[in-house]
Length: 422
Image (tube, rainbow, N blue to C red):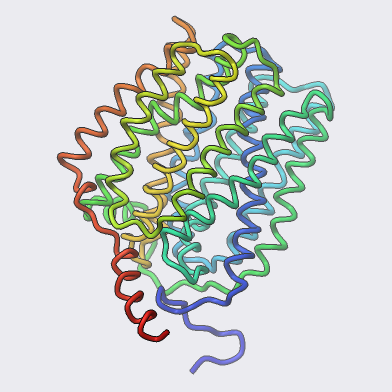
């Protein structure tokens, strides 16, 4: 019998309160705004403020993102074992501290390459602890199918995330200290939204096992293949955006912080726009096919960017790249969410996130060296080749082309019943 504050763990079939998802979106949007600003600050502090060359900036990003790789698996374990509301509130509190630390260091005139690296390590590590739980909670606060849930979340967080890029673009106007304090404020306000979530207790688990998530992924053929293909895509497609674009802005188009922020806003707007379009057709019956076909359009986009187009056309291609990446990322996350059992969901999602994060330090080093030896535009070429590899291997061997979404099947069975009820 359940009394007082005790409560049975929520199952995947139990409907949450209607307010749960809006509060989750609010918390996640504020988090995304802070992290979008972080992505801008970390890159521009190295490239625009400290004026470090591409190989040093790539090495700094690699250093900042290796420690969170281990932390991410720990985050998956904790996300499957701790009340979601309590855990996410704690993560928001921790995220307030690094921006305030760097603001103090800057005020003392001590900001250096290694302080920026430490800033990246702290922020990435806390994010790695938080993300598996945050994404796992998503399935427990929604009242609609997971494809549309992931898409709505992406639209909302992207829209607010652009505010983070805008704040970064005001760096020269507001000053670094003010921008860092605003970043801390975004995470702090998110605590109040997180506290409005329902209690999200987890079922009793076996003793913590860091390898459980990896085993769960490896034991499911389709999840294993999706994660593998996502790793390849992140290595030189997402990697090219993260590493090459700042130098393309600075060296090819002679841009400043404001131009770089504008490019990031345009890219994010493309990602958000793709999800608005996807939402109109969801749930998709064969999301894997869309993921594979988009690899071909990405090849064309990267090729056109490589030709060094005029600035207006550059913006168009960056927007198209955002459309493309937004669609493929949503397909991957929604499919893994859909396939992962609740018992190991956060750990499986931590392995998916690991595929994003492992690729980043590797591509940072490789593409950083490539840019230093050649030019920023050359870093786009490996992504063209990798996109073709993903299309061929994914279509022939992964099972993605044949995969049919359970969300679409469920919606099909519900529609006739809804129609007869009318």
